[in-house]
Length: 99
Picture 1 (tube, helix red, strand yellow):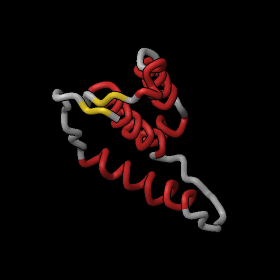
Picture 2 (picture 1 turned 90 degrees about the vertical axis):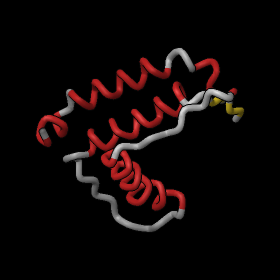
Picture 3 (picture 1 turned 90 degrees about the horizontal axis):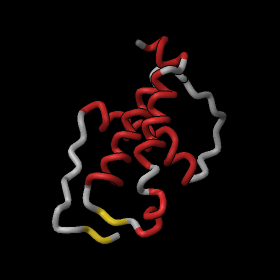
Picture 4 (picture 1 turned 180 degrees about the vertical axis):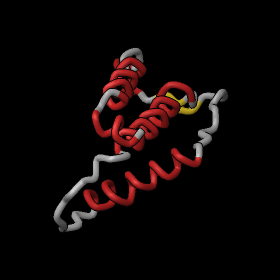
């Protein structure tokens, strides 16, 4: 990864911090460390958590000024894919139930 001189710092909102920590603690760490367990995922609130994570991904890829050679061919598609995912989550039943 190369960083240009115009890198914007990532500033997370309190909700984004909570969402990222939730994903890290509840999913990422358990997958990476092969934590044997039974899975039951509560869907209520999950769409907003994923929307928060998608917004962080958008910022890192599109606005931080970083260059990711392996993403170059997808750079134009990434915002549209994130918007598509966000819209799908906003229209999901669990999101509507949590609102």
